Amino acid sequence: MKEIFVGVKEIGYIETQISKLCEKYNSRNGVDYIQQRALFRNYCHDTITVFEDCFETSMLGMQRCVNKVKAYQTKDDLDIRIATLDIVDMLCELKDIARTMVPIKDLPSCKKLTELSAEDIVSKAKDLVKNDFVKAAVGVYLLGSKVNDVVKIEDVKGYYSERLAQLNSEIRTKGKLISPIEQFLLDKFNAEIGYCNIALFKAGIGAAEELKGLVEIGKKHIEKYENEYRSTACSERVCL
Image (cartoon, rainbow, N blue to C red):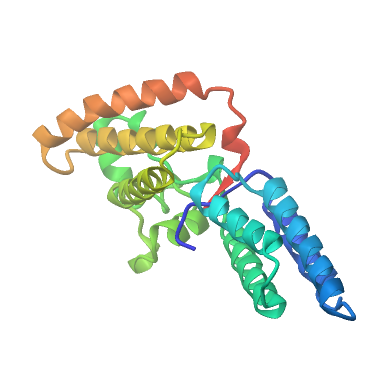
């Protein structure tokens, strides 16, 4: 699963619900195909319930999961054992994804850098982990393992640029109206890229003329994000 998944509950809760679901049907078997089919349909129903309880189902990745289980639930002629194993694999993968989720409020950001003087940014920008602008565990994991765990502004910008490209690709694939959480993430990613470009420009890192134009674009994204999501509950959710 390469898509972006967003949880709507705490990470521990999501892991627990998936584990309970797997344990509930782990050793239950029907005496004949009719009973097995009824049991499997209940399994599908409970799986979809967990999906809807724990994740944003408007996102492409979770929509694909829900649609696959619904297809199994309504199909009459199928190999129940193979279908069950497929759902179990899906649940295991989602549980692994949940383990690596990070609260949106804890995602790496260069916002604080933009509030410093150009001289201070230069001294701090060499290692955002060391200077406490990015949490070490979160930064090293999300931004990739670095030599001596060094994380720079360019790494943060690269992370959000990749996330933005992935999200736009998923939205195009869906071909539907953008959901509120997708719009929030688009604005979040664009704003974070804006903070990075402002910090890079103030620190004199990169091509000045190119960055100057990106800074102006970034300021518009930041203004939109900060004005519209000042009191949103979206930042309390968890995101891969």
